[in-house]
Image 1 (cartoon, rainbow, N blue to C red):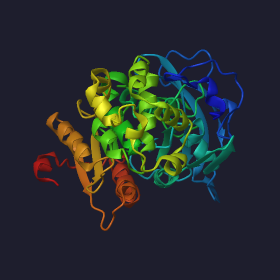
Image 2 (image 1 turned 120 degrees about the vertical axis):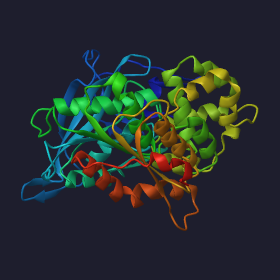
Image 3 (image 1 turned 180 degrees about the horizontal axis):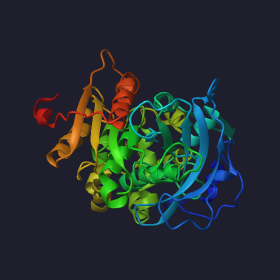
Length: 440
């Protein structure tokens, strides 16, 4: 079974799925039949400062309209910038900045929002910046197909229509061809968000200034990324002038989420999580191999180059008990093994006071990225003195776990964009932390 261009990076060995970082020539690569432009191959040497721009190029948006004041919704630039991973190592991250055609009507200079995407997958063809260019990413290679939809474009364009500049991150290893995406790694995700803000302010020819207020926006994986970034700002990026964060359906407790998604439509995310764990902590590979059978190793290798669309078709409703030698679920394995349990426990969000005001919105019927664990994160922030607006979202008549999770992404999106716009315009928000004990 071919794994496309990442054959040299993900090896299905007899004993373990070994993910290795190799030198990649500065040329276009291919993943499941999709060409990954040479732009996404990082250089050998990276700048010292986090948030430094490595390279940029104009980015044509798949959805744009000619307008009187220029191209609507704005002028896009693909970016690569330097960040630092959870092991303290330098890493190149890609993304995209969009300069709005619409004017900013609030007080002060045009603000900037970092949009952290929801789950896109683990193959490099799944990156949000590539989806902005193509809209729909389709590919076939050696009987492997891929499907990636740029579903975050609606939120991005809504923010642009308000006159807010937007920079989106592809996260570490998603797009860039030198490593695997460290899916839901708290530190990697938070650093990628914070350094995207730094990089956007270094771009020339934009209306964003050093004094521009910064907001964060994210749902699902993105909600966890911006929540982590809001916690990490004081220690990692105190220079980022973070004013407000919208964190929708954040996977704050991975132990809870791992158990919930097993056997669901999002079961493929289990493989992305384990692959990411082994990328961040190679010592876990041998431990994972003690439990994985051949089917489990094949699934992890297969998922490492998949997007959400691929995984929905191939792994929806699969159970991880079929991937282990003793029939245990991955959640049970994590609970039983101290090293795995400690690693997952270290990903917990809610243990530090966030900067600025945070709106936490979560569907009360969400049983994948469960309402309960997101609410616990909000309550923990309140206890630490954070300024939190907790907003439970009620959907009527939904029965599918997938719809219960993704429904609020759309039904609450307008409210989320308006709320963040008002905060960036300087309007105050009233925390409802005092009501947390009686909220559903």
